[in-house]
Image (cartoon, rainbow, N blue to C red; front, side, top):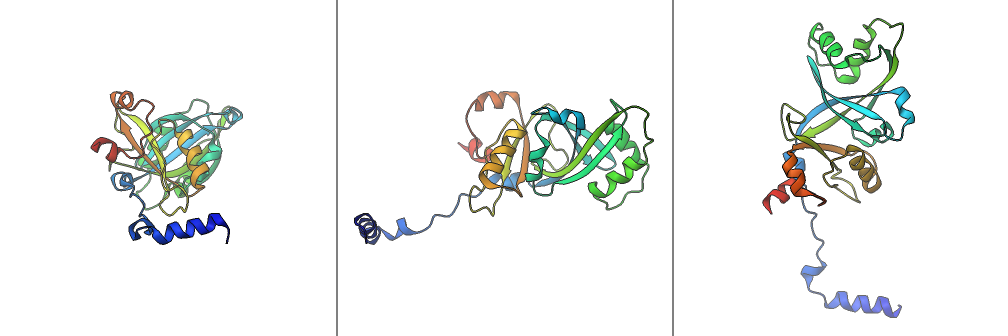
Length: 224
């Protein structure tokens, strides 16, 4: 036994039992607060994918309506890190088409059923007439969990994002980020894939108060 290992062994022998007990991880309160699941439909113009961070439009898929939630700048290549992510293929659509209104109209005309976004979207897109001129649009879907049962984010509030992976042997939670691409990149680096995406809206005043602070949990932040 080396001298260093012997010293560590002696220190362990003399250490109080409570110091040798493995500490339980701090629970992620945001998983309880942001427990309402919403389906997100994401679109990106295929030609824009040549850019480092193309614009991706996020829609709240809530039949019989599809509403624009926000636009974010991120590489679609990081979206598969989200648990429940599905690639829905590419469709040729009229340029500047109103995807939100078009899909909402198609959903309103269709009998309600238990179909999920991946099942319904190809059927709805298949009903559209092929335009003479247009652009190729890629479609994706993934779940997001928020603190609101009806909305992904309340109007007038700015979205923040956080990744969690309770069963990870490495990092089990991330920090709240104002940029989705940063939350996804940090989550992939620290915990890999199958990440649970959380979101909540905050006021501009709250963002100013937070500043450059990294907030692991809004529950703990608001209580401090």
